[in-house]
Structures are given as C-alpha cells and as structure tokens.
Image (cartoon, rainbow, N blue to C red; front, side):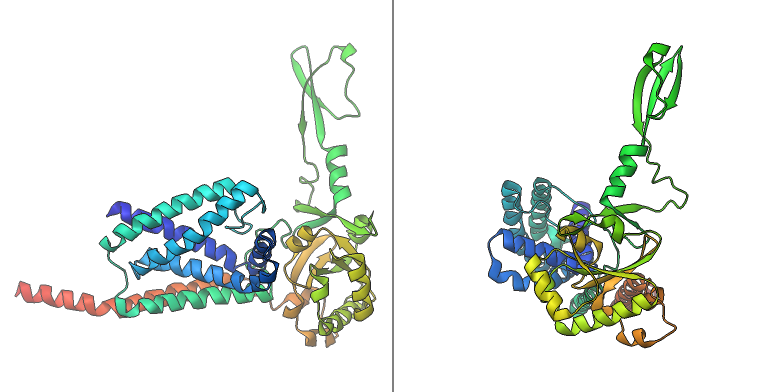
Length: 417
C-alpha cells in the first residue's frame, strides 16, 4: 500500500510538473514541437505545433492530478501507458541521433541530456506498469460521481495558464533574459571578463598576495606564481543587476554596442518569423514607433530572417525603424511572440510582451509613458489561478464526502446506543 502510494504520487507529480512548465510557456513548447517535427522530416505537420503545444500540458496535468488523487484508478494508468509508449521510443531516437539537443520535457526549467531523458521515461514507464497492476488497491479521494469534475477543473486551470501565457509572456520566466536583467552586447560582456576579471596569486617568504595583470611582480624579486582566479567584477557592481548579452548585426557587422546604449531607452521589436507578421500588425508597430520616439526612445527591429525576406517585409510595412539580424534562438529566448515587444530602460529590461497583448487605445493617451504600457500586467495571476484550483477541489471534496462522514457518524452513534 505504501509503495503503491509513493509510486502514484511520484509518477503523478512528474506529469504535473511537466505539464505545468509547458502551460506557463506554450510558445517554448510550440518552438520545441516544431523542432521535433522538422528533425523528423514531417514538415507538413508543423502547422499542428500550436495545437500540440496547448494539448500536451492539458493531457499531462490532467493525467497527473487524476493519478495523484486516485480518480479513474484503472483508466488513468492505462492512458499514461499509451502516452509513455509513444514518448519513450521518441526519446530513444533522440538519444541515438541527437537530432534535437534538448528534449524540452521540462521547458527551460530543467535541461536533461537525451540519454537522461530516455532513462527518466523508462522509470516512468515501469512506474505506470506497476500502477496498472496495483493502483486499484488504494481508494480514491473523490467518489466516482464527481471524478469528471476534477478533470474539468484541471482542464480549466491549465487553459487559463496557457492562454494567458500565449497572448502575453511566460507567467514564470525561466530564461536568461528576465525582466530586470541588464541587456549587454556580446563584445562588452567578453571584454569585461577578459580584461578585468583575473587576479594572480604569488607567494614570497610564506606570504601570499594577489596582483592584477598590470602589477604582477617579477619572479626575479623572489615571488613565485601560485594560482590565478576569476573575480567577476561586473557582477559585483554597485547595482548588482544580472547581465546577459545578445549579438546584433547589420549586414554582418556587429552593432550591439550602438543599439544597446545603456544611457538611453530602447524599444525592441522581435520577429522570429518575419514572413508571418500580418499587415494590420505593421500599422500598430508603426504607431508604437511614433509613440516611443515622442518619449525619447530609440526603436529597433530584430529578426533572423533572410535579407530577401527583410527587404520584402520593409516594402510592405513601410517602417521607419532599422531592422537588424540576431540569432534565432536568442530572439526566441529574449521574448515570446511574433512579433514581441521589449522595453529596455537604461540598459535594463523593464517589460516584454507580445504585440497582440498591447492595448492600441493607450497609444492615444498623451499622459501614457512607455513604462505604463505594461500596467495591466497581473503579477499575481499564477497564484490566483492556483488558489482557484485548490479552493475548487477542496469545496468539491467537502460536497462529495460530507454525506459519507455524516452517515459514518450516524452509524457510530447508533452502535453506541
């Protein structure tokens, strides 16, 4: 009984965790599914990537919760078995071919090697087979009449997370470019490490002292080199702001320093899939450009598109801001959406969101600032939806099991008489 309970909670917990991290970042799941399909040569099925990105977290979380609470004790393990019989061979193929370096099973929260992922799936498969045989030994928390309600509540919860994240940004950001991060050029980041961050340890007459590269002593003076160590001075700066770099190019020339001027404000438009940006979106982008420039901010576009695609798009968009290129992965990591908008204030990322989540009417308000364009962002959304699920499940349990407790108390009272 105890072993079965532990296996049930462990397998269910892994499914819940895997589904949750996908639900809070459906764009990341969408990119990963597309990568899988392209690696398999299934280009005609890439159009199903978005549906899959939404369906996977729903399926995983529903199965995980149902298993954990004991609902559908026979059906849930069998559905998990079907799921694992599909995913385990896929991860074996990944481990052998390394066609996709990271499986994306746990989003950007936890990165496993492909062989580790395959091993994890084998353990889950063993756990599911065990539960098929022994799961019915343990009772369910909920009665059969309301188990479908549990599944419905979890479905609503996951969809609330996924839809909000899809039209905005990941509700929990596990990527390097978090809000509050200093955005630097790749060249500046490398220079800060190479030029400033090493100290050298020398010893003389039993005394050890540290020197910089400029004042390192001559060994002829009796000093003997002992060690060198890295001191990340840029991380120990007065503002203690974490930094992450990005490389921005114009016709192959690195213009990162010119774009990421820490003394000013920038509005960055990100286009991971430039040909898919619609004409109505270009109108909003142009209005947003005027809005930003009136408030003293520079505006730039970043894309990984080809030069021909960029030329065609600029003719259609009639944009007045420069369009530069950046690595496709960095663009997708910086912000989700096509297009996405990132506001950088004095080198610090202040907010980022998809273009579709911006309210166009705000651009017509003279007292509106670039910072206040993000005022409608709800920082408590994740916890509020979590409370909704927990309270709903608790109320369902009370309604479902109260009569059982009352009848049990009644029988005990009758026996006592």
